[in-house]
Image 1 (cartoon, rainbow, N blue to C red):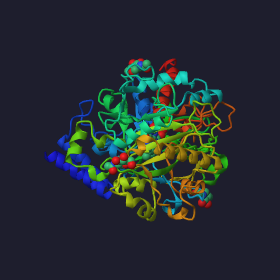
Image 2: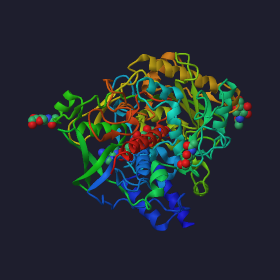
Image 3: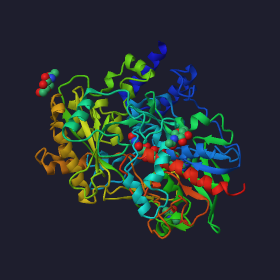
Image 4: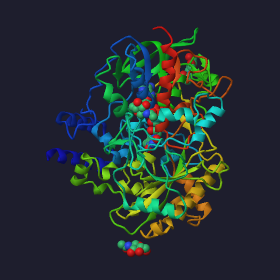
Length: 627
Ligand SMILES: Cc1cc2nc3c(=O)[nH]c(=O)nc-3n(C[C@H](O)[C@H](O)[C@H](O)COP(=O)(O)OP(=O)(O)OC[C@H]3O[C@@H](n4cnc5c(N)ncnc54)[C@H](O)[C@@H]3O)c2cc1C
Ligand SMILES: *[C@@H]1O[C@H](CO)[C@@H](O)[C@H](O)[C@H]1NC(C)=O
Ligand SMILES: *[C@@H]1O[C@H](CO)[C@@H](O)[C@H](O)[C@H]1NC(C)=O
Ligand SMILES: *[C@@H]1O[C@H](CO)[C@@H](O)[C@H](O)[C@H]1NC(C)=O
């Protein structure tokens, strides 16, 4: 019993303060490890320990060095170390996950912890008006598991056209037909009604589940969507236009991260794999004459080290840090590198072409139910017990319950290619009393107090309206050559007015669904307290929503394209279709930064797929060599 009480207190602290201090995190981690709390995880281990931390690379030289342990990096570490004569080193700047990371409901809180790099985008007059200093947060995972340790766990692959267009641009090998087997290779699905679907594998290492908990409100939303003419679909199946409950990367209701799926199961058995956490890579070592990568420089415990490789350095540090490391190593735009005093090794457009899925937080609606919205105050001992047994409200993935992928009238694309996703949440930033989610968004206190605080304790729901194929794109660049300084991010959302108009169509469709019989039965009414800065406009008019879109702008964190893939001769490309950095030997980038155009999906599944496909390409390269 006292174990439950302890966890309950821990959870209370999280809910009340919103901010998990680093010390608290450590204390909980060590404590939980000591008492071996809860049922063991899927591999019969208690995986929340310091077991990686003390380690240093045991060798001076490896076959492969992988930088970053997100979805792509963890898959690579697993697949390359299948070859027992290859020695593989995985370097990760963050630390292993704790028990709290495993709780899907708390996803948003991790943006306030050391598991987030904590980046913030530059200010721009066109967006994020409702955020502190008009700057939006750019969270990114810093953990063994990468961003999959702090993300919302939605498992979503995309539309066949996404990949077929990559091929049309000269990226051989990436058609939907060719990448589907790599999605399937990872997947271990446990999805009701999809047991015989050719689009799902049931025995791969990455668990994909239905979310065990469903609110009354989401049932209304799915039913209401169907009443308004949307089909119910498997968005990872044959067609992508329609509504669906979320498919989640969880296992028995606990977060399934890249680390729990691909590293934990092999950590003790693969002696040829070294995993080192709290190791921050600062530079790729490249011979400037031969333009060949031969190792990396990294910092651990405030000391600088070098480690070398015989075959390849693979950057899987994500869409912000992979380009940062390339630039620090002399690969980038000449004028920029000159400006920051980095001597140039290879000129490439690194950091350009940053696409993202911008969204609008809302509209929000009130209902006349009670206890059906998310509210952190609902978490009591019974809910914790339910969670430990794999069900209950704490298994909900940060509140995301359903997705409705739609094609608006603004889109000139084919019928089966959605341009907007409606993300259903049974609450809002008020659901945790303005702690986790608001802080992650950087929403101003004044806006919260005036608009959202009155919703605390009242049942309500919101839709986040997300743009799949933005016309606007941004870039990132380095401030200076200090590897510990943040890059600067210029997302340029809504540079193209069409992006605002498409989101506006998504808002209108959400309101239409709110007027469906199923939603009306719940007493649904639009929440019409106006945003303070849009008050001069009449609530609900197109101009009001245009103002709202530029105020409640929030990213769904799908930044891609900063090390764009493209064939030789593509002036915008950084890596070739086999993910080798153009003009540099023995150096690849394997993560979502290579994605040339944003997919019609969230990005984690794509990153797992990229890791699987790259593993096979790398094996093909080196298995033919004698080694
Ligand atoms: C809050 C949030 C919610 C999200 N929700 C979803 C969702 O529900 N569904 C979905 O599909 N996608 C979601 N995403 C996006 C998705 O998680 C990412 O796109 C995906 O994890 C990217 O994988 P990656 O392998 O490219 O890199 P990452 O997962 O970002 O991993 C990169 C790793 O490299 C490490 N690293 C970086 N620099 C260095 C260095 N110098 N030295 C050593 N290590 C380094 C980082 O610490 C990190 O662990 C979300 C993202 C965020 C931030
Ligand atoms: C399903 O996963 C298993 C285990 O990883 C793998 O052997 C099999 O090839 C996968 N099936 C498909 C269709 O990819
Ligand atoms: C680049 O080097 C020059 C000369 O050493 C120095 O004056 C300048 O401040 C440096 N710039 C940066 C951004 O480090
Ligand atoms: C909620 O509103 C609906 C529609 O107006 C109504 O039918 C229902 O009885 C109301 N429920 C409650 C609990 O007030």
